[in-house]
Image 1: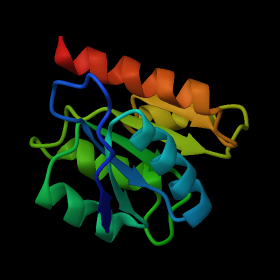
Image 2: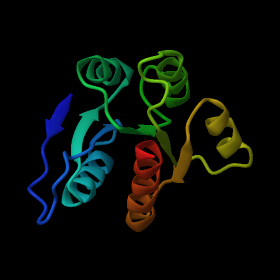
Image 3: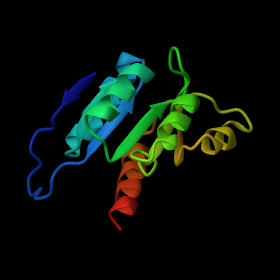
Length: 139
């Protein structure tokens, strides 16, 4: 598990939001980390379910980006575990997946994910979706 604080963002007055990125592919984690840190977010990284659950026990993030194809326990099963915990049930989870077959989106949302992004990830769309879900939890 790795946590990196973002550089200060000019004009930022509120406490940075913490985002847990659960992704086993290093390059994907790095791209997401760089993009989100540039927007002022604190990024915590996990490569599998064990690291993710340890991170959640340590500090509750405001949002989770969840790779669906994780080693060991799938992202869908991990999402179900997270949503079954009353302390974590309200954390928005955005699925990140290369699965683009008919029915994949519905299956992933049924597992408890709040949103879905296909890989390769469009950085602009990623930022928009993250900001949208973070605004929703503030209201």
